[in-house]
Length: 455
Image (cartoon, rainbow, N blue to C red; front, side, top):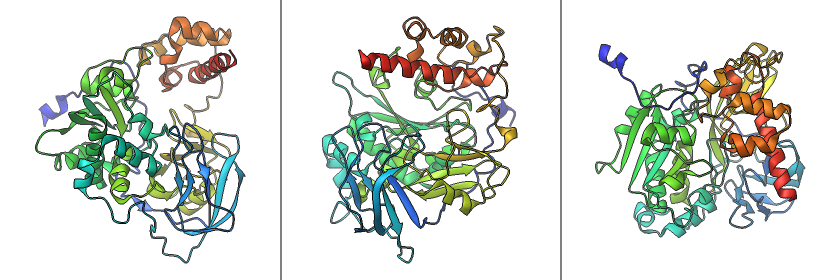
């Protein structure tokens, strides 16, 4: 026991240890949320071009049926989350802010809501998957409408298309889930191991990698045990435990911790022979591709002191936030709704926006829990260097913040590597002056992008 307490797992330099608040949901099995009477399905739930609607108002649709087809390679389709009738197609509010074209479906609540649509007459067998060409598998991934379920919502088939001249030797499966409150990936690793391993095999075949490593933080040792019990005997897929620390789940940090490799500035993981994919993404691929079905639901952590029934739920995509909160007991004192975790999540003001593919957590905070997201008062920088000690990329957030205040955005990028910042929020979290550094950096990046587009 004493030796176990002394054991240290791999990690990266710097980072922070915020309160994790996972205990209220990590032991709760995945449950299914009821279907809302009205579903709102945005045609843009991902980076890239929105899908093109192929249904009309008044049309009856079945659960899993194609609603919008991909508009080119940098796009993914959307499928119906319920059996019902298309009420209207038009602009609807989204969590991003601007309204976007969406399909509104009135749910036929009397229906069984069994998935009634598949691309294939009969499901593919494992033998078929093992013999399919990588290009055909990439097309199958795009047909599912899959995007990164860790929160980025980047089309998965694009991420599986390796740039010319790059060779992937390792698939790194991200099972860290380092954000406070969120435990959806944890439950997927416990309850959907077979699907996760199948999805990992599919991705290995697509990118041509010899091995896959599943990285899991040491506060999820039950998941490590569950996965290890079903690993293939040939050693092609392994699991490695890493230290619990934020932001361990970031690509650059996880690669450093598990493989001891570093991504050069301005490059992607493929530059060093690695492909990084989220566990929930791969588990869903392991379910959807053999069945020829589309992504119509996902596992979401719904938590926070403003929720009476916190837990992990399978939620149909397009379910309005207001319906979710009503079903699970929205606390009257809660007033801060965040999609994602408190470190990198986005605050949402309206309960009319729907659950989309990139939503991995709905977090309802009270005033006492808001410090990270909304400090009460901002003071001048005191040059304490805490942000330098916390930054996992070894940037100088203090200097970047000073330049941002002077609106010297181009200098931030040219001399201080602004674009290497992945907005983890560690600097803002440790700042005793409550300076919203990461928000400054987001603004600076946005302005620099607009200038380049104008030129």
